[in-house]
Amino acid sequence: MKSLLSIFTKSTNSFDGEENGERVILLLRRHPFFIIIQLIFLAFLFLIPAIAGAVFLPFLSAHNILSLFLFVFSIWCLFIWSTAFYTLTMYTLDVWIVTDRRIIDSAQHGFFSRTISELHMSRIQDISVQTRGVIQTFLKFGDLHVQTAGTEERFNFSQVPHPEKVKDEIMKLASSQAPHL
Amino acid sequence: MDFVSTKLIFSLIALLALLGYWVFNFIIIYHLARFGVGTQPKKFAVVFLLGSVALFFISVVFLSNLDINSLKNQFEKLDNSAFNFVYQK
Image 1 (tube, rainbow over the protein chains, first blue to last red):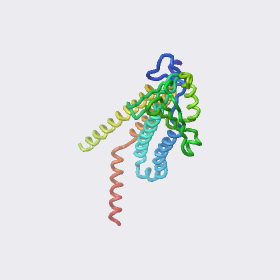
Image 2 (tube, rainbow over the protein chains, first blue to last red):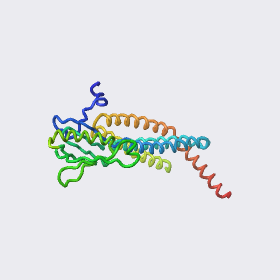
Image 3 (cartoon, rainbow over the protein chains, first blue to last red):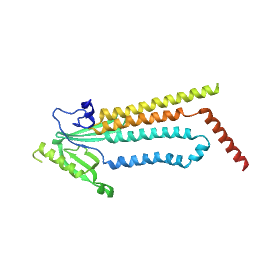
Image 4 (cartoon, chains in turn blue, red):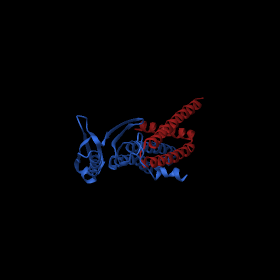
């Protein structure tokens, strides 16, 4: 039982396609600002009928439709709850995994729809950090572009927290893989 | 007969909505538990499951408190009063 519950407290951050002896260095998601904004919007959607119900309580009671209102409101709450967790699921599953060997970009586009791309550390040539606007500057998040050898497209980390630290960490790992860098 | 068919249609819609709701919830929990990396998605899955079950039972309690006949009468009354109001103008 204790070992079963440990999945909620301990993690080796294992993932599909993990190689033998591969170690996860960074597990990155978009900055929480984006999910918080969406959750605040859903909280407003929850509050609107709750406030309306409180305001029109005398009317609902007088016409004996309070029980109907409560039922419809509970269904509305179910809808908001599921929508909130759908949003959280998409946010949580959209990850960048930096291991000691490679970078994996797992992008979730909806249920049962994912794009997984990977880039080996030895192929990294250049990393640039882009912070745009007041919100990104104050909340310390931005975009990270990893340039690989050749004419291949860049590997992008969008709106990750502390992009400079992430860049340093990746450069350190890339340097250890390719001593000429 | 008319009331029976209304009740049947209502029950069928409720059953389909119920099925759709739990399938949707299962897919969310499956994604969080199966594809999630780290402990955070598993925690989300547990919170979501507990919350869904609690909210679902609250909805069932409110549904069982509904008196369809009484509501039908109330809506007829409301409808008539609105109709009269238009004519009085």
